[in-house]
Length: 175
Image 1 (cartoon, rainbow, N blue to C red):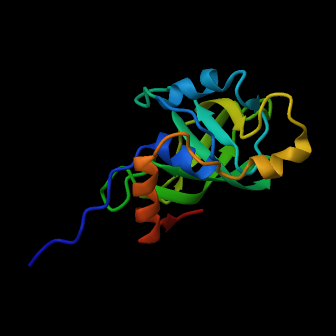
Image 2 (cartoon, rainbow, N blue to C red):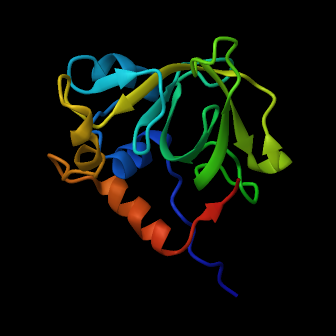
């Protein structure tokens, strides 16, 4: 008896780049700084924007996740990879998982995120730098709908191709 194919282990960065179209490379914690002057940044979620998490605790490289839906003023749904271990495996894709703004000032500087093993929001308040929008600085807000569509990568995105292949096999949805 042969085991089935092992799906690739995915990191958050190439997945966020793939689903948002934001062409930033490097560890998640560097995205906020790299976006300065290249992309609009802000403190309010928008569909297609990337939420940039700061390093915290054992999450030493930070995390990035794309906003897939705004539920209300303090709740969004995210698309991300390598957050929850699913079926005992890290590096999984999760689509439409809940994240809640728990910041005292309602400014999205701290969030709690759905964690699959406990089937609930995790207890940690994760620090967030803000949101990176797929718009050039100075672009008008009306351009954001067009800018939110992923653009072609300037170079071949092998990890993105792996992600697409694994998405075609089905992804987990939690909320």
